[in-house]
Length: 240
Ligand code: URA
Image (cartoon, rainbow, N blue to C red; front, side, top):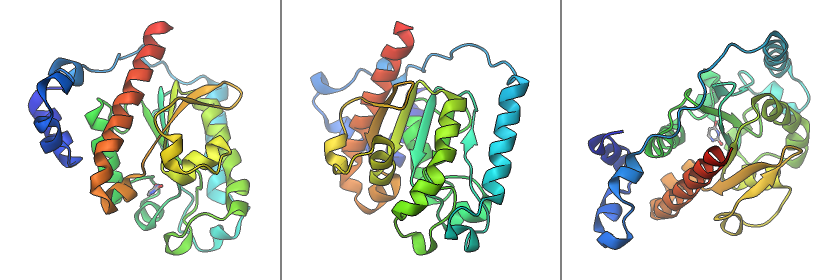
């Protein structure tokens, strides 16, 4: 990624001024920021069994009536991206726009999420899969109820088992707490590597982009989280 483009992404995050103002010794050198992530092996087609599992999952989510949200949603929103992505981003639940379009994070928060991903060299659909804890929109964008999460989270568990990501980035309190089975506040879950599930997948927590839209002063901390996640990812991929 060239420096001008990186500056654009950081500006979209509201971070350009902060980055430029830091004393030179504390600034990550531009080449390190701009370095692309390892491309990884060339994608091969999904094997027939995995493809069939994805199809079944998609069909089940589309027809799901396991919680009352099915009555008010337009459609179930399974997820979007590379089914073999090394990065999995997990948010909370579809909002109004996601419910309409059938894709996670396509509203204003999604635009910020895309800018956050681009700032660390990722792009929607390329080496990233984006999903939510809930596949159906809670009316009025209220928080998911525990019983809705219990009904829905097996779909996310199946997605994770199919994707087998190298790193999960949980954005926001709802995703973080439900994936980690914790009720700790988000601030206490940031800044370290957790592990998820039987495969012990490394999991890092950061702020939800919708929160960052409401509290732009926190973008600086989100940027720290993203750099931390990128560093952990690099260690994981260079170690293996
Ligand atoms: N917020 C989320 O957590 N997920 C979406 O898909 C959209 C907004």
